[in-house]
Length: 185
Ligand code: GLN
Image (tube, rainbow, N blue to C red; front, side):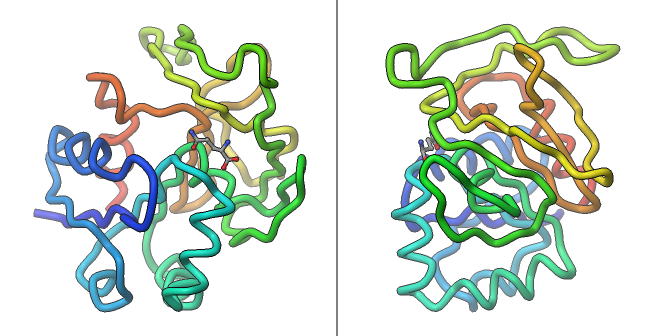
């Protein structure tokens, strides 16, 4: 059975661990580069991207994570999507540049910053998507494939082995996003 690591420095890593097990893989929490060595893929969960970035630096995980991403798939949800982006705005912050996307943090604004929305999935049933202070993907590069959009903006995209969602599939029973990630391991 394949092993998926869930970065467990901050955020909702526990829900991703359970979602990965529902999708048929083994999940472990990752806090060190040694733990990363045991993984076939890695999830960067939702949470607070600025804090997560700071903790990745403090724990000396940035370089190991970059090396990992050159060989193995990484999936970022919400704050994780912000970390994987090429460019981050509102406000700007450094990122890992693993996917050719530009994201605007807290893109839906403060008034209605969290919602559950029905997101149409082409040729499949709608996804009940939970957005929590979600970023909006403002630009995608040529090599990025858009798997779903909400209000016209991409919310589930992939490029090569990597994937992001701006919503939180780990908070619902719908296993399609995690299964797609497990299938590419
Ligand atoms: N707003 C958060 C950020 O900018 C992301 C929110 C989330 O992951 N649910 O990092």
